[in-house]
Length: 339
Image 1 (cartoon, rainbow, N blue to C red):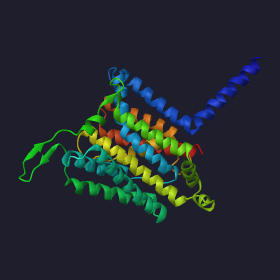
Image 2: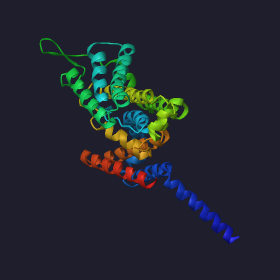
Image 3: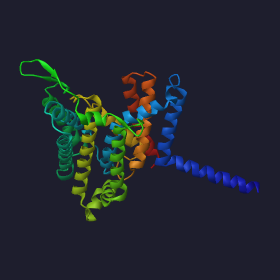
Image 4: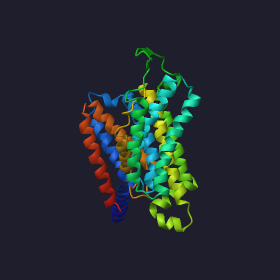
C-alpha cells in the first residue's frame, strides 16, 4: 500500500513538473510570482483594494489590444514594431476629425480604422509580397507613421484648445465619443476600454483558434516553405495578419485619444515593447508556429499587474523599462530551454 501511494505521489509530482515545463505552466508561474510580489509589496494595502485591480485592467487594456494583434503576427514568425507609432497616428487623426473638424463617431471611427489597416497593409505587403524582413519592414513603418503623426499634428497635441487664424485659442467641448469610451459600465465597475479590449481579444481568439486562417498562420510560422508547397495562401494569410495588427493598433489609438482627451503625436512610444513582452511572457514563440491568444492573455495580466505593482510602489519609469527588458530576455531564454 505504501509503495502504491509513493508511486502515485511520484506520478503526480511528475505531471506537475511536466506542466510547469510547458508554455502554459511557465506563463502561469510567472503570473503567480508577480501576484505574490504584489501581496508582499502592497503599498500600504493598496494592492488589496478592488479599485487597484480595476485600474490595472483599464491601464492594461490598450497594451492588451496591441498584444492581441501582435500575437497574430508573431505566430507567423514575424514581428510588428510599428504598432506604437500607428497608435499615435490614429490618435492624432481621430482627435483632429472629432475635436477640430466636428465629425461624428460614425464617420471618424471607420476612417481611423482604415488608416490603421492601411499602415498594417503596407507592412504586410513589404513582408509577404516583397519578402522584406519583418523587422526592417515594420521598423520603416514605425518611423513613417511617427513622422506622419507629427506632420498631421504640426508637432503639437491635438486638444480641445483650437487655435484660430489670428492666433487666439478657443475651447471646444470634449466629443461625445470620447466621453463614451472613457467611462464605466455594469454598475460603474467595468471601464468601456476594458470591454473593447475583451471584444478585440475575443475576435482575435476566434480567428486564430477556430478559423481556417488561424491554422494557416500556424502552418506558416511552423514552416513557411512547407506551407507554400502544400498550397496554402501564404502571401494572403501573412498580409492579413499585418492588416489585423494595424486594425488593432487603430482601435488602441482611438481608446488612447479618448482616455487622454487629445491626440498626442508622441503617444505609444515603447508600447510595441510592452506588447511583444506580453506575447513572449505568455509563451508564444518568437520563432512562430507555437502559442496562442490564451497564453497571451496570461502574459497581458502578468505585465499589466507588474506595471501596476511598480507604479503603486513609486518605481521610476527607467526602472520599469529595464525590468521589462530583463523579463523579455528571460522569457526567450526559458522558451529555448523548454524546446
